[in-house]
Image (cartoon, rainbow, N blue to C red; front, top):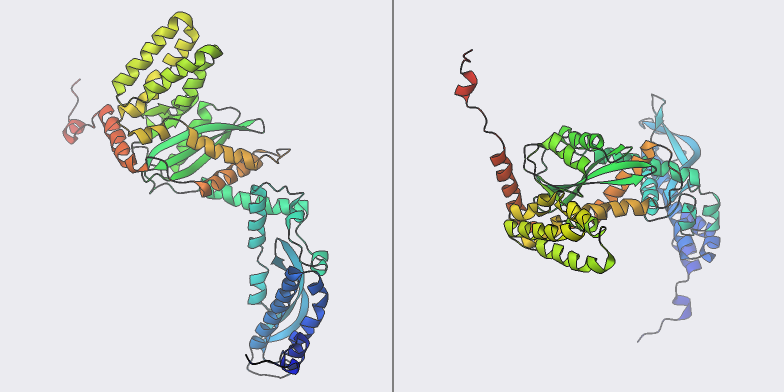
Length: 439
């Protein structure tokens, strides 16, 4: 192997002095201190130096070389002024060159500066970190160290600045959720549930398309989970394009207010599946601990049956047995009993029945909402509550996967449509409409 003598080895100093442009040599000289603070600080310093060079190169391209008069140029240099660029979750001061157009004598934008000064990356980063559990007060501590000189001039890392950025981003999330068009959405099922937030209640809706995709639909705020709030939510979905005539299976926890709202907006014959897990808890709450295991097994065995009449008969037999020793438990079981086996009546597959037999999918979404809200100490009004809930719903959507049994959803949707059509009164014929009435 050929050896290279010491004089032939290129050193950093030799390369800087011999081959690099003068402007870059000066920049490297200024970065000597940053290099001592680590590779990241050095990289940031180099990056800022490149940004300055790019801005100056753009000015030269537009205005021509400095010190040379060009009568055909359409802009002239106009000094420098302080500006800010976005860097790693902070705003950093830079000196940006200015240009003025000829002959209008108006400020001409600098495309390079506008690109690097865009605040959207900073706002998005604030949003992501707070959703991950970082508080506004602690946001600044999550930024990576980029050198004492840069950190000494950083901006937009305070609690108030972070809060403003988060408000802006969550307002966008709320607008995105509540304006989402539903004209082309074909739902096989819809889940509705409520969550308490800041002494108020949000009723939220989660749609499941015929392809098994879970889709947050909207939210509505009220004092309680009442029928008026739920009706307003469902009516808003219709206003946004959701077809109330399409057959949709509704899955709820059994709240009477939600059941009434569904009937008011989608008709009394809209099929409803009550959450089996909620029904199970309601029944077991009336029993002693030593009796709960056996009754739980009986309930789950009945709901696991594929035949509708068979499942219904098994549940009614259990209610009759409970009537003698625990009448309140029997009453709880009989309340809405038929709606706990709606999936069997519709002929849903076993895998799909396990998914839609409970409100677990929407409760999972609500769990994400509660998780990201855990650092909020004081709610400052309805807009704040709705923004946080919407942000949580959209965050949950990013984690969604298609439901188990999604391949059978198309068959379920057809079964729902047939049932709704069979329950609806026939539309009058043209002859019946035009036929005179005899008094």
